[in-house]
Image 1: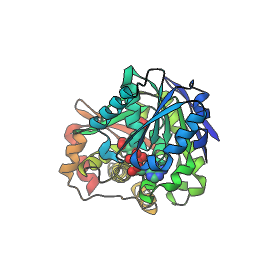
Image 2: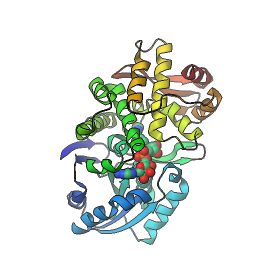
Image 3: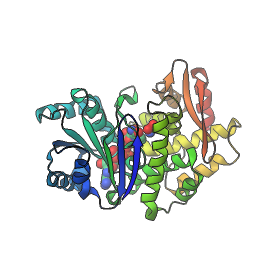
Image 4: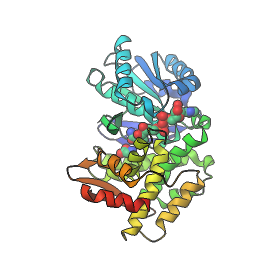
Amino acid sequence: MRKVIVKASVEYAILIGRGILGQLGEETKKRIQPCKAAIITDTTVEKLYVEQAEKSLQQAGFTTCRFAYPAGENSKHIGTLSDILEFLAEEEVTRQDIIIALGGGVCGDMAGFAAAVYQRGIRFVQVPTTFLAAVDSSVGGKTAIDLKAGKNMAGAFYQPHLVLCDVDMLDTLPEEVFADGIAETLKYGVIGDADLFEKTAKGDFRNDLEEIIETCVKMKRDIVMEDEFDNGVRQLLNLGHTLGHAIEKRSGFAISHGHAVAIGMHLIAKVAEEKGMAEAGLAEKIRKALENNNLPVSIDYSAEEITEGVLKDKKRRGGEISFVFPTKIGHCEIVKIPVEEVAELVEKALQ
Ligand code: NAD
Ligand code: GLY
């Protein structure tokens, strides 16, 4: 089992291995006295993995209860959060108890937010079941729900007490959901690891998943330890996200987060090249890597539609929005763009 330690406002371990879901109870017990464990999951993951998680927790001395919401991004709203909080209260979960987020990024973001606000904060454990959640969302403590105005518009920085990633669970992912995680993995490559990019770009790396997840979470760990609250270097992790979030939202979440980030990453690389900030051929390298992995690289929406979403993005601070521009594989820069220039940027991206 691989182990990565994060020293943020909470110090915690990320455990990565095959067949380790059965160790969830014992690994949790090493860090948290047995108590009530409220498992938050979605209806798909519930059928696949909740019994094994419950059994492991119970064998280690935890009592369990569970709440499953309908799978998908369309559940990531205040109504589901409210249902989770009411469930915790009905189950008489106390501040000594814990939440287990068993699922993908939607589950981790929502259950983490519930953990942050229920009784002003209870501890939680992330058990990522998608590739995207394994390489990115289960680590770093960003929790959120979507509002009508946009993605992740309400949330909290709230670190888990443990992340346990059983890589075997990724075997049941549909190809397109697995590809969402590839988009985020390529993102880590473009941000700061050319070797990771090359390895992932070829599209045949299933045998190296544990190593790839470890590489990504170590990079995220380093960034989070430097800038836990997203005021500086952490914004690099938003590569492809400003355009991506607008695309995801415009599609009514028919386009998944990872697929939208893939499009956003390619489009912003085109703009970086056009602005003379990136080395020639960068957008093409990114395009090929995405296409090799069956990820989309463009979208039919108008510049006006995307601009409207971008201007509502929570990364807007006053009259500026931060964009992450790749300059070469392994290096990106954060640039503040005045809101008046966003429409022109989006036009260039779509050309
Ligand atoms: P998701 O949680 O909706 O999971 C995608 C689908 O896969 C769902 O239908 C789910 O039921 C299914 N699934 C999950 N695990 C499975 C398994 N092992 N086998 C079969 N099916 C399985 O979505 P996601 O792509 O994991 O996460 C996307 C979300 O993550 C977005 O809301 C995004 O904003 C968020 N995110 C957050 C962060 C962060 O740092 N907090 C980072 C990146 C993305
Ligand atoms: N996924 C972006 C972040 O964690 O900052």
